[in-house]
Image (cartoon, rainbow, N blue to C red; front, side, top):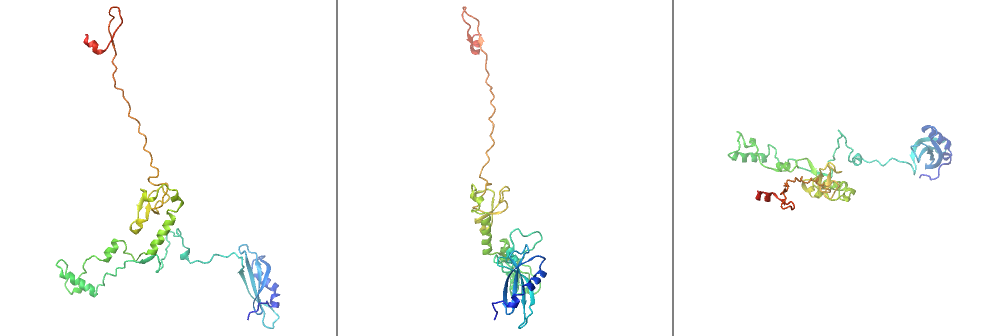
Length: 301
């Protein structure tokens, strides 16, 4: 049974423990004696303060012991231990959990786990039967029964397989002829991430005059994501080339501030009115001079 009271001789071996700590540490880096802790019967660990600048709160631990009925204390080990207030490195996290967006560089390879929850099995081509299977022989026999099918000499097993629509053609047309595709979990994770970065709750969207749903620069996505997301195609927008929520918005909205048309100058006014001079008649009876117009002059000519 481990004794809680330090052995007297081992507890008194402070100088022996300090000498061992100073031998392991840099000169002057061993501080005051802190405590003597009993690790067992006649086994004591002396703790000294560590003065290393990068090891705040750490302590040098020197373990000493003595044999039963022996008077000589011997040295067991010297080690640097963290104290209650020691500055420790953060807890180790696997690389797959430390990876953050933007960490990938040119030439880097990111392996994907086989059981990644973001992915599920896609089309693998299992609907195509092996060449020598009974299904393939039956398909070749059906080809041989048609007039247009090429028939090769030999058994039905060597006849060419018919060209017919199958799951492979449909999967390729839908873009799912891949080993794995997005699972429902992966789809929702991506949607949550995009909504957080460029969604309705962002400060930019809160101050926007309108949402992306009514913006002419929005390019909608395909599939189910079309109902909630699109790609911004405005080179001056903060989200250019990014997937944005339809509820997102910014000041670069296509209808936020339409530029007024330049004013058109008024058409020049050309005065084409001809003003004719008045003709004067000679005086009559010593009276006044009468003014006559061109028509009257012509009438009295």
